[in-house]
Image (tube, rainbow, N blue to C red; front, side, top):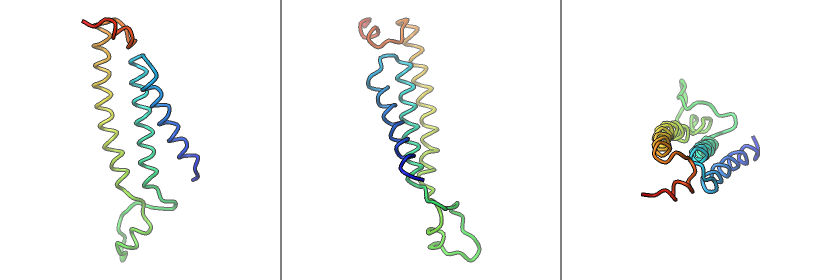
Length: 118
């Protein structure tokens, strides 16, 4: 595994950040947030990766030092699983908010929404 996968994760982060900052459509901003979160998840998993590593399960006659030498770090994987649940809840709330914005203003364009205050 080379630097290409890290570049892909960095690319996901950049694409998500671009959509978050530069786009004016609410739906595109929501998609940008999701892409940004996927890039963060990928980076977290890559931090705990070890080439040839295995699951951190203690075998018969094995010490914890031997286990630590051969296994991958489970903490980033747990953080990613937690982040997936939090991201799903956040996307549901943001999509519900976008639907309410569309019902009130009739558009997803942020420039039009800012002009229609009141």
